[in-house]
Length: 371
Image (cartoon, rainbow, N blue to C red; front, side, top):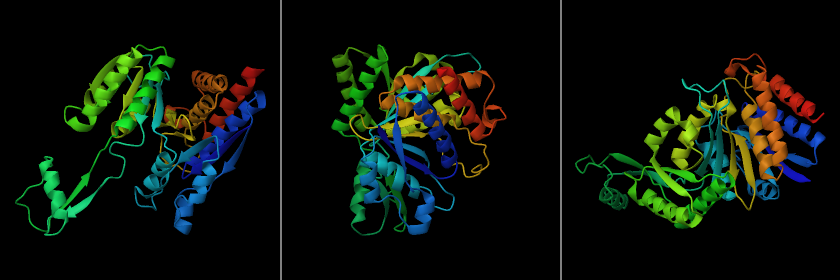
C-alpha cells in the first residue's frame, strides 16, 4: 500500500489532478498497485482565507507520505511570487527535492518543427540552488551600512554608477552553488545516463560569463565524467536553446542549473506539443518526491473543461515509475499515445474533447488494454 498526498492547488490544477487520480484508480483496478490518498488544502483559497501558505503540521504530514501529487499554484488575487515561493519552492527545499526531472518527448503530430524529429530528452534540472534561492534584495545609495554592499557589488563588476544620486535604489539577486550540491546533482545525472544506456550527457550553463559558479560546476562534472566513463558535452544556454529547435534528436540526458532549466524545459514542452503535454518530478532519491504538470493554474480557463490533462496524467505516470511500478507507468504512456493517434484530444491540440472526456478516453484505453 502506497500513501499519497494530493494537493490540487489552484485553477485548473483541481481539474487535471482529478483526471490524474481517475487514471491511478484505473491502474489500481487492474494491477497490484494499491494506494490511499490524503487531500491537502494548500493553495490560494486557504491563503486568502487564513493567511497560511504551508504550515509545520502540513510538512510533518506530507513527510510521512510515499509521494506528493501536485496540481498547480497561482491566483490573480495574490501578488506574484507569494504562492510560488511560499508553497512550491518551499516544499522543494524542505524535502530536499534537488532533482527536477522533465522528459521532453516527440508527441507527433504535435511537434511544431518543420522537420520530422524523433526525440527523447531527459532534462535534469538542479532544483534547490543557483538563482532560485531567494538570496537578493534592494539597497540605496545613501550613507548607511548598505554602502558596504554597494562597494562589494561594484568590486564584483556589477554595473553601479558611482556618480548616481544618493536616492538611487539598486536591486540584486545572487546565484550560489555548493560543491556538495553539484556533486550529488552530477552523480544523479551520470547514473541516469547509465540507466538510459547513453554514452554522453550534455551540461548546459553560461560559464563564459558566470565564471565562478559554472566554472566550478564544469570542473566537478568533468571529474565525474572520467569516474563514470561517459562523455561530457558542455553547451552555453543560448546555443542550447537554438540547438533544441534544429536538432533535438541529438540530445539524451541533459543536466542544467535551476534558472536555465526552468526556461529550457518550457521550450521543450512547446516542442512536444505545448505546456499541456509537459510533466515533471521533483525528486529526492531517498526521501519524499513530488510530481506535477509544468503548466500553471491558468485562471482564465479554470472551471471551463478546456484544460489538457495529459501533463497531469504523465506526471502520475512518473510517480508510478518512481514508486517502482514502471510497467504501469508504461501502460499509462501507451494509453495516451493511442488516444492521440486516434484523434482524441483537447482543444489546445486541435481536438474537441473536454478535460474529463480526455481523461475518460485514457482510462478506457488502460482498462481495454488489460482485457
